[in-house]
Length: 251
Image 1 (cartoon, one colour):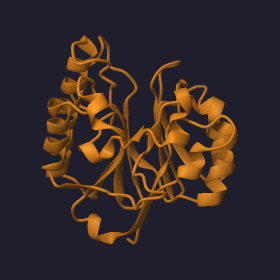
Image 2: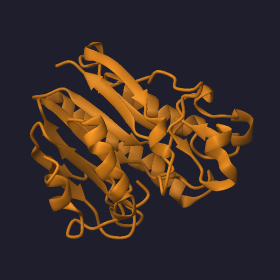
Image 3: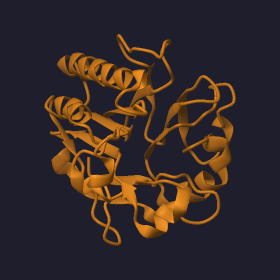
């Protein structure tokens, strides 16, 4: 979102248009106390938020039930303290995780090591949850990882950058190996990207990355009827620098 309060007019317009049953959002940059619960409930959504103030923050909105909310996960590392980067709830028979993976900054930064440690701990937590899961899992959010070179507009420019390093992609691969499918949204206007930097007209040039992912438990994947990136939501006045990924499941 790059600040939920700043994007609320866009959210309040988008929700009635698309009418998602469940919405996972990241980088809300609001505390739980200042989260706009009442406005969103007015549109028919139950809300659960995890936020500590001006940085990070995640939430789940649902109109098909919102049960067993969990903020954070077991052994979640911090920088130095745990941050508001993960929230989970059971919605309409699916266990939904909304996550905001640390950026990593640069490969020689302590934040990069934090990113890898966070991903490893997430994998362990998900593995533990799978052993006794009463509902299939879906993990959605800003992973800050482009899974393959085709998910970056010019791979050569990112060789020495985060988001594309072998260690990050391996960490994502280890999560997928638990039994998840990385949803491939259908292409809109020739590019598979979900994020475009605000600078230098990157959006209009098509200089983007696919870093916002939907991982479905393998048992859910065959139930997917459609998936697309709502590129139009990146246009207009005061957009986020990310576009929503919309997935239609027939349960």
